[in-house]
Length: 116
Image (tube, rainbow, N blue to C red):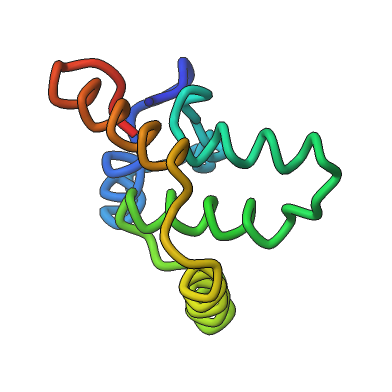
């Protein structure tokens, strides 16, 4: 969502390219939905003292891509996504709780609830 001090990221980038933006870009804000199954899973893992630095960085890069930006470190991003996919494959299919959470989130999105 746009910050109180300015417009959205697309408009800020456009005005900068046109040479009309005299103020610096607003710092990015990463909004999360605490009920999203991925975020809930990360919260449980963080409570178990797992190191989630790489995962947090990957989420930030995904948010950048969602906003039309390139990842800050594309090679590192690709390597991390590859590692996560391989780990997921090694661990087998999602647990029942994960599938149910994903299904609930999809239903909420279809019903016009949370988006993400």
